[in-house]
Length: 562
Image (cartoon, rainbow, N blue to C red):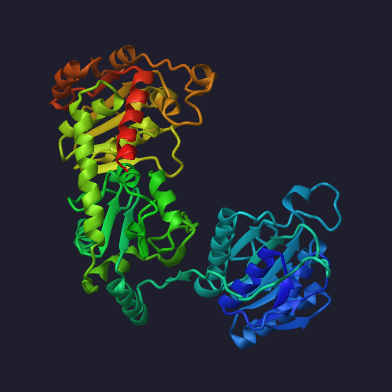
């Protein structure tokens, strides 16, 4: 079929059809010609031409109300888009899924006196249940994946969840040329995301999900940060993860600790050959928030697995570019796992073999007893009482902990929503203030300096313990390739850290202890974890360059085994 070569226009029209749109009201224009062509030439659509956008919008409302099905209305850029707003406001208060699709100039031409160009992207934000703006710079696969996700979320909210109008603003770089801007499309396919918005899964959903999980040979469950699962839910997840066709990759921040889980995720991902398809899953089930592990994200982006996201997310992030199903109700989804039949497979076994190999390699490195940030944190975590709460700052602190084989803490937390260093100390203090039992906070000196106000908050009591890695600041910048060789590294990237640990501890009533080598650390740990009438601060001094080099040596150990 000959149609527009504008990918974003074809994708919008294809997804409209996928979400049940059968009728489109079109108003003439130049900028929206590719959208008109994509709609008129789509065999699944009935199209109507109406010159005045105000009338077009209300005609779409009438069609939507009478048919009970979503209807789209398409117009050109500029004041044409404004003329749709009366009808869209009616659709908003009448709960009608009328989809306003407005053509637009590229964003870089806004406010540059280009004709028919106004600020359109959020034009209807107060009278729609969802909105998105589609860039015309969509040549890369990553950008296309992001566009698909945004369009799916927008249409699902309008049609399947909140039942109201939506606004899709589509940038088009140049209007269509009849001679050159055409393409022959063999299939009108698109990737529709299935949103299971019900408060609980329906009987149909239940049987379909159980059947799919019961027939899949390779299921990967991935648990990210701040999962918030109950003890019973954790048991159901770990029981499911022991099946032959299932592997569980659980970052320590997920608070899911079980002997069958892959927890040293970065190390395991470096050990496997990512080109070996035996490791590829058929279905990826993600639980909790975002992932720390970059190697895992890169691995999953290479597979063709369906991605099932469990849990409510405002933005529904499509981290791997494979999002296919969303189950907002965590409890309903997890409860059905025990109903899934068992499948013969070697998938659990091959991942478990790599997991055990990674642990042995880590043990070999730790037995060398080199003094660095990694070995110091390993020793600190190994001696931490199991009923304590662990809070981590970003940077190297969280990465050191992510490689620890099993963090058996009461809870593990880190500010991974934005992943910044600001506020880590304050977050740990706030958590300790309301937690039962003791809290341990591990932070770098740069993060601690950034948030020194937390020490003076007056909320710190004797249950709070803090380990400050005194490495001269920004050790992570000495690890990653993009920054470690920059001439500006010391002065401007890692920056100068001024965190007078001893003086601050004494000034604010901490018991202070420090360690410059492994022997001193061993002597300090009983003080850190022992009974105390005051909070305790442990300053661990390591050479930043040596520590970064040894951490790179540690990672190289896993790459060389590949």
